[in-house]
Amino acid sequence: MIMEKDSRLMRILMLIQILRGYQKHNDRGYTIEEIHQMLQDKLGIEISKRTIYNDINDLVKKFDAPLRKYTSNRRKYYSLPPNWRLKSLDEKILNRSEILTLLLLFKNMSSTCVFEEVIFRLQQEFPQLGHILEHIMSSTEQVVYWSENPDLEKNNLFDDLYYAILTRQVMQIQYCPFREEQRLYEFHPWYLKEYNQRWFVIGYSPEAEAYHIHPLILALDRIEELKPLKDIPYKESDIDINSYFDDIIGITKHTELPVMCIDFVVSPELYPYIKTKPLHHTQRSRWHETEYGWFRNSIKVVPNYELFNRLLSFGPHLRVLGPPSVEEYLALLSKHMHENYTQDLAQLGTRFHSFPSVLDFFTNHTS
Image (cartoon, rainbow, N blue to C red; front, side):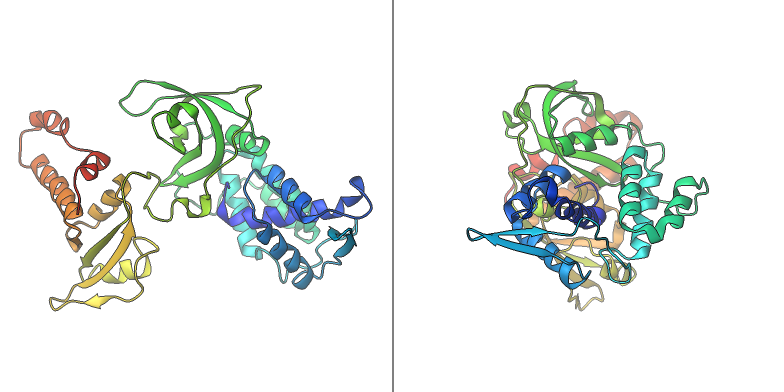
């Protein structure tokens, strides 16, 4: 939900905590249905029952957990001894390097409460890391540097939204889009996502849904005011966050537009870079060298602003071959870029008032 890398770690630690605390419930343990509900309540994310079964199997096979099973009326109950702990870090969910990387990332963020919570849970489960965790907590020396902007506005909202998601708290958000009037949303926060050094919150808003915008994605640095709304039932997430962004580059998803297969060629100079760092996960692993020495490939994505920003970032070293609508929009962008440097500056403002957005352009163009 918050960080893909730590989601499994937190899930396993919560699962152990639940299974060890079975006596608060009864002497038999918990059913999968009960574990499923408690994990989702604690973590604020959707988890499949198959995932829970896999986690329980990992506890037994990989961590030698003395799992107790009890069957009554054809129902299975699971529990762990109250004092059982993970004994070794040799074979675990995250290796030592990943744990330290995660902690350093949390420390570099403004989310102090979240960082302290992760530290506390790791201290409980991995006492052998005690001296390392204490050093990370007390050290003021920065030896790892991230691309995240340390002066990013309103990062303090991260904590409030994080706990709103965990506690299923509906919020009222006063939001100020670029070049538009402020808007007031009843907002049901579901997930937090980072892209290009900015944080975004994803959720449901009845005001946005009235304009067929669902889910609503808001940039934290555009939020003017945030406060809880009481006595409003929380609407649970109805999207699969693990696949929702699969068919786009970036954060903007135009559900009205289709997925397009975008063919492109890159120069020999750019080829090694694009080969090792694909434009998108749908980029084919096999490249084709053309008769003129450039290399050809394709991706399957929905057009959005971030896509064209990425394609143009490679300058003359990348050319799109199709579909025609994508070529046409890139040519239009390139023409305006050329005019920026060949026409009088006084004409800049008037030209861009009529420039079509990605959504407007592709709604009216078919390939």
